[in-house]
Amino acid sequence: MGGAAMGYDETGRGAPAESSSNVPAAVLENVFDDPAHGEPGRDRVAVHVVWELLLLGGLTAVTWLLWRDDADALRGDALRSLLVDVAGFGLLALAAGLSLRTAAVNLAIGPVALAAALHFAEQGDRSLQEVLLPALAVAALGGLALALAVVVLHVPGWAASLAGAAGVIAYIERHTAPVPVQGGYDPRPTAIYLFVGFAALAVLGGLFGAMRPIRRLVGRFRPVADPARRRGGVAATVTALALIGSTVLAMLAGVLLAANRSGPITPGSGLNWTVLAVGTAMLAGTSAYGRRGGIFGTLFAVSLVTVFLIWSRAEGWTINRWGVGGAVLGVGLLVTRLVERFGRPRSAAADLEVGPSGDGTVSTGWTLTRQPEPADAWPPVLPVQTTETLDAWQAPRWEREPRRWDADDH
Image (cartoon, rainbow, N blue to C red):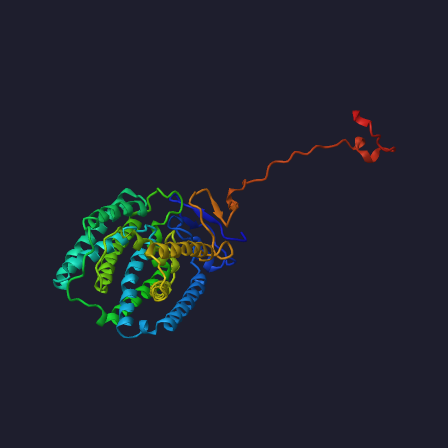
């Protein structure tokens, strides 16, 4: 035949029935991807490159405005405090981005960060190790409980984490007054190392997430048909690890942000931190649907939001975290639409989307085209044709006059 026929086995996986040199190898590679793991093909990164350049331009502009209005904010101790803020808030944005990439967003990261900040403020007079180890154990166990609820019951991450956030808020509300920060740990002398560590973690995570096998592995929990259907043991394991990791990162972010403060820690819900962190992760180019994300986007978006908050204070503006978080989240939704529209694999021109129905069809965009049946399914012999013999004397050629229109009872 002139093309490649596509067959299906009992599991719905594509299997080559016939190959041809007319079909490019790249197309065949994408055709034989497992349809249960999402769209076949390689995600496009051009949309992330363009958007990250825009983020870098915005960061440059806001930094210049801050330098013009308050140059001291970018010098000495103020600069070191700024770098610590970027590192601390960056860990919180990484926690949001990690759970977003696995399509199980963790809405409890804000309350967890605030609870960790209150814990550090109360226990800060002890050694850093004595403060961190209990908080780390509690965060890991809490993340494990959240992960089990999500992957065992197979419920949306936002719903399960919202229930977990309610439990953490109940602990926070036990504090009725602001808690002054005690202790001698000052992260500012190591600000540059903290910032470089966050930047390396963000960029390396983006690079690994851009690799096709890792991207498909991390994004397996993303639904491709009925969202209530289970996605398998591998997807459950990866999602569970992501939820545990995001909870631990949120705890570390809260400790770092509390240690960088000069004033007391005010109790609250912490959900404003959740809105700001999730919005920043989406502003960075991470899709709200999971799986897709950029490389430098988290670093640029976190720096942009942090510098903007400091510049707004230098301008004397009264902006609360809810307002900034809502605006950032709104822009992040638009970015998600762009990422999903221009970041998905190319359509039938380069990749074929294999439907899991197992009915012998291949989807090429919006339509389904049925593959031709193999030649051996044709009838083995031609049907017997019956011929009628005309009497030579009755043949039309022996008639001397033309036939009338009403002849032969017509």
